[in-house]
Length: 279
Length: 279
Image (cartoon, rainbow over the protein chains, first blue to last red):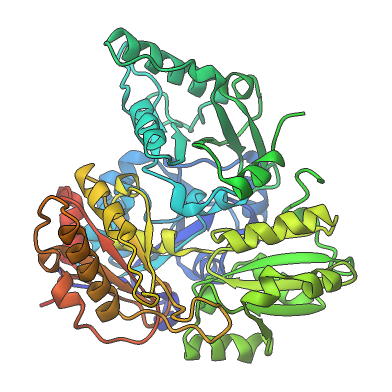
């Protein structure tokens, strides 16, 4: 394996060579594209967009396509069994645009490792990720514990680990970032359907009932927990709301959402949260 | 307090109005500036750079100054007692450039809250932050526990909480991002002196001795822990090394560093880490 094969744009800008450029798009707002991303998008001979680990809203996708042209979408099979993609990248400059940052998902790290094994040059252009964008909420970065994701329920199987992560963080006085699934099929081949706040909070409540039925020490009614619903962060449709989980579950808004479950906010954090309270 | 006063660039681009633009610079590499940051830097009537929560390397600062001109540096006093800055922002468009992202430090959230109280319009342009850049190491985002910072020791006072955070994360099978202090004076008024790997690891070892002397259950020799040293991430001088803490403490390299203490890496994580092993 070639070591340290990945490198930064500014040290190697030759798009006439072959290789794979992983291009972080950020949240989808053109203003949050980096100069390096724009350069790679414009200069790679082939540009694809990865379409299953995140999702762009229609208006953002339109703005981007108006400016840069249409890209073919690669779904899970084409990225996780990437023979065709890597064959192309071994001969031409290939850009793979990824919504958010490029190296937050296992699947993209796997892609880099495959390239290095095949001695295909890789170029990483980081993008602004959701873990940065939640800074706007005003909670302190150092007070976040482990993050978790609520998956769509699959048949009758209901994992309780996401709620357990939140409970463990709360026990340690830490906030939790809760990401929401976007693929009810679990296959990554269909257009993503970002989970709604209603479904997410309903699943959290079911997890709570299951834990209680399994004899977990009594958990308070989680519907009364105050939490932050972050919707379409970093886009023109950004919305942040602070209320009880039950109140948040009634918010209907298209797009991608995440939840933050804060634990006993400090004084400055409380002032910051007040801005997002539902009237 | 005005609610939800902050807004995105693309919805409000009128730089002839007054207000405070918080502009995320990212790690300092021009390629990682966003289009929104470039636009705000070029159009705000006054542009300052915040100089005490992070530090640019000389060559990066030079590249940026060559392209955008010289900015006055604001140190801690001018940002935390910002009467002058806010007076100006109440009359003109004022950009405050912040290295990395803009809302990861308490001090900048406080600034936003002050603006909203004074009804000074605020505009937030997120930047790529260290928590995103560490993605390149190849450890899974969802396996990170709480982050911590190693402070310079002040007189004889040695807090042990950073090591306790690492130990607690390890107990829960989680990785830890360890940021390093950059102000030995604790006052935020002098040019930052980013802590070296040697000093950081020496302080960690002292924390370990102190915990042991206070009767903590025997901790193994932390010098033999394997960890990742990330230096100048996102810049042209980026370097990532994976080795024991004792080996890492011998690496001499100028600039900003952080450590990641992984706990029992999974298979894909181990493959990713191998790339950074010291020969």
